Length: 76
Image (cartoon, rainbow, N blue to C red; front, side, top):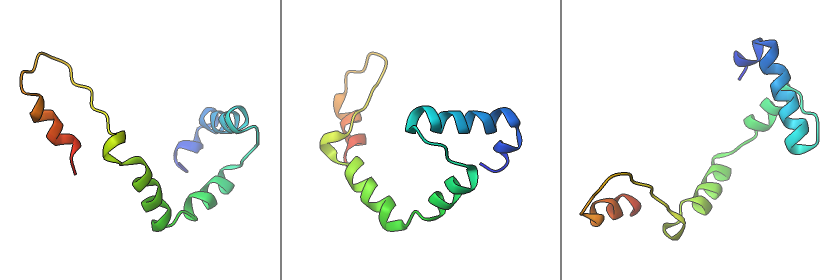
């Protein structure tokens, strides 16, 4: 993120994105502090919410006769 923001266009893009999407202005140092504040327990909580078998989706292109081959990819 730091290297990306050396480009003034990327810096402006970041500020504009936060303003448009979140209706607030966040400076890069604030964003980095928020990122640093993320704990393993936060990641685990979000992962448990996202990675539930009933929520998993898989898109496959092509003619395939063996559907079980792909169903195995959705099991954990």
